[in-house]
Image 1: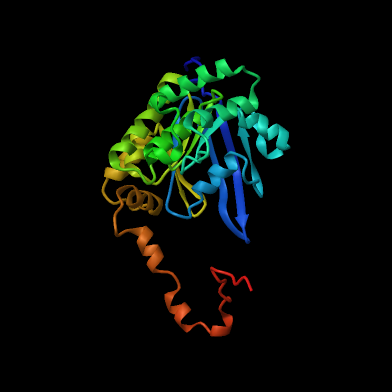
Image 2: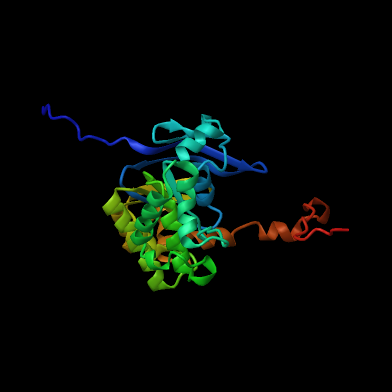
Length: 297
């Protein structure tokens, strides 16, 4: 028998355990458990309404769980007050789907804002840091432009420069390729890869863009109806995508999503909803519709 020690398992920088979140009594997340390790890029994906955006918002502290816990950099954020949560937030950055830039500020001012708010650095030092961050995303020469004067891809890059302002250990990305043309999307993907390699940043990326996911991921997590179907290295998802149709339902669900097939268990599940029951349902039993626009008088 060998006395060799077991391979070292790194401690996760993010640890999610048995996470449950309900809205109006419906579980949007139903017992999600996952780890994110230092320096890796974890892609979280799944169909619309699967819970991936809710999971991201819970990781950054926008929502509190109904059950379960989230540890970020060794701290259980679900037990922190606002001051403690803000201290943890300084150690991660967020790239929102729209870039979320302040339209009344130049790119230079947008990137400088978190540094001015959270440090006591002098203006000259802040200006140097801003130039470095903008150079990282290829926007230093556009520092004095306003968001209205630049393209959607440039806005994403400017938002990323701002997310990097405080030298975060973790970056969260919410649909970084959404709304971009294929070339610009590939540029954003390459930027994510470069930041991971050059700065050692840990990345959590929520996306349903499969080309992007397979370019950037070290590991992938597939959610379905608020539950985790599979968390595995990218190679395992590539194998599932390219393999013949599996007998296992979960594997078949994942395969259809990865391939974007029009037919499969996902579409079959949608088509097998209670159509006949809905047709025969008594009108009085139906829930009163909620108007999309409410009258003001």
